[in-house]
Image (cartoon, rainbow, N blue to C red):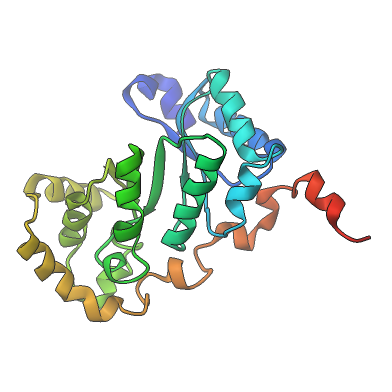
Amino acid sequence: MGKALRDGYRDRVFLMTKLDGRSKKEAARQLDDSLRRLQVEAIDLVQHHEILRFEDPHRIFDPEGANAALVEARQAGKIRYLGFTGHKDPHIHLHMLRVAEEQGFHFDAAQMPLNVMDAHYRSFAQLVVPELVRQGIGVLGMKSMANGIILKSNTVTAVECLHYALNLPTSVVITGIDHLDLLDQAFEAVRTFRPMDEKQLHALLAKTAAAAARGEFEPFKTTSVFDGTAQHPEWLGQEPARVQALMPG
């Protein structure tokens, strides 16, 4: 990506990346590494990645936490907008928003799974999206097909998945594209999309109700398989010094 951006594409894209660091030191290091690898002076949107645990917001908003590093970077012109992502539980997203509000901080964007299975199980669409709309925070919908896992339920088509996500008040629907057929599929979904009325929406969601009931086709919610920071806790950085000082020994 850095090579492409260096060769004249930077002014034609909205550039986004994510950071796993929870400490100020680790977040600053990861941001500088991204700027170096992307070969740019500034990134349009940087998001705190994988807000999966209820302790994550407190670590990020600690005086020694990651958000302090990103606010400083924004003041220095290295970042335009700040957001966060997560795929585990909508209540953790809501907790992140509450902690941010307690700190007097307003996020520009939040990213979460928005798909035809999510509507039935620990639903980000039902619980988080209305709050983001109320606060004027950009809604980034990911996992519209759950890495293709939803399609294995044999209940809906890929285009139906994309149409559902587009029907929500999303700012961006993110869809993975690793070959040209999927790019064509995305174009087809946009070309054929029409806002759904309540009857159409109910009929679509009825197809997935039984399959979605236990989160089987959203393993990022029900397992740790998709949790990169669970497998690599070193990416998070150290706990705040004041917390370490409270520990016995």
